[in-house]
Image (cartoon, rainbow over all chains, first blue to last red; front, side, top):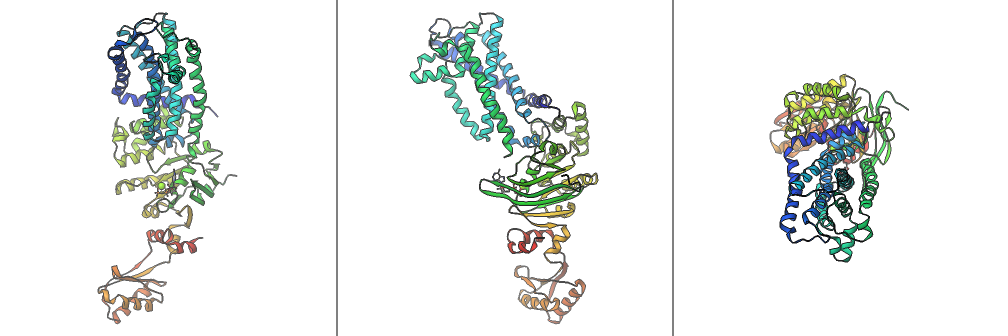
Length: 261
Length: 323
Ligand SMILES: Nc1ncnc2c1ncn2[C@@H]1O[C@H](COP(=O)(O)OP(=O)(O)OP(=O)(O)O)[C@@H](O)[C@H]1O
Ligand SMILES: [Mg+2]
């Protein structure tokens, strides 16, 4: 039998794009949030911050904000998926001879396209604020690739959690929990400045690995930690998302297949 | 093991949610090109049967075949041959009707052009051609139901499942859906229909299964089911309530069967064998006894009465109703 995964995934991606085309304002609202965060942290709260290795806090902050935005994409994916599951249209998809994974793959491609767009927009805002990369275009592109890889891993966690939660109410719990997890990282400040075990968690946070790795690649200041996690950030920035994908991807697909029980 | 005459074959179907059985051994066969009605009170298990047959839900026990394919082992083959109109709309509310139908057409692998052509054809047929770009979210309930029905026909299914297709429709919308179903059946489609409207089953169904608490309480043609709870009745409404008991005695004597009374309606009645003779004899005897009659009629039982007698409250009737 012909395998329809690609065709069907593309149809599902088109569906997501059609949704976006109907509410163009939403994309700008979605972008306004991370941009506002950058502005607030850079200009209001960041004034007193000193980066240990020397350098501008803004240059430290922007790569961290990019990583945070990618990670927080988990939430929008989760919301979109729970809405879909509760919408009833999923029943029609499931009663059709389409590739079952296309529903999830379509969702992920659609979200990745959006993430790439918001990533570029944030880079643009950063450039306007005076942030620069210093190690050449190739390294910068690799950094963006790592950021999107993080997003891709988070997206599949979001798909899985969306299916586990099932109901929009439970999504709220995740929306609240994601904040402390986001701040328990080196996005805004050094992990080593945090008390003992919190610092260890922050250090091993996948978001920290990506943030540190892209700071290195952009040639932006970091805290130059000496721990294993800090010195192997580029390795971790690949290993973490791949490991998360290996776990949550199959879990998500299995969960979708199991909807019939 | 393909049964060519029976497009739906269900044997001993079971489904349990938690520890509460929703289906407790359901048997069902539906002949090709017919309409089979699935009737039953709320929670009887109608939707559960439909969802299992449409491959949306896995049974815990028993066998179910649709169009010759096992719904568990050959789910994909089944999906190629069915259309489903679920109890709740299965549409993308954010998109327009056309976008919905085109999307479903692509997912049925009709190709971009084939999907667009099929969408246009169905929109036309269901009077939705002028809905433009309007999102389904802004449709009226009836428009949404018609679009949902159109979506279940994208592939011209061999077997069509309709779960309460006309709930919430006005009489005109209902008639439209009925006509659509009749023309589909005329074209050879087999339909399994659940409904709360007994008139709908009476109008459309060749055979009916009466589901109660996860079991088939009765099965047969609408006429067979009506006959099963006792054929015709003579019904008398008296003018003065104090004459009701006397009237009941007269009716009992006249037709030779025990009359029942309904004091609120000042009504008494009994089953009759010989329709016209029983009516004349009852009228004559009532006149002789000086009882003033407000209304007298011969009645066929309605499907509603069958429904009420054979499900829930009529637990004793259920015993002797099994075929
Ligand atoms: N997802 C579910 N989880 C738990 N119980 C369920 C679930 N779906 C259905 N049930 C139960 O299974 C039984 C049969 O439900 P079903 O929806 O099949 O009834 P129905 O005949 O379609 O009713 P209605 O006329 O109200 O649509 C009911 O007791 C219902 O509460
Ligand atoms: Mg139902």
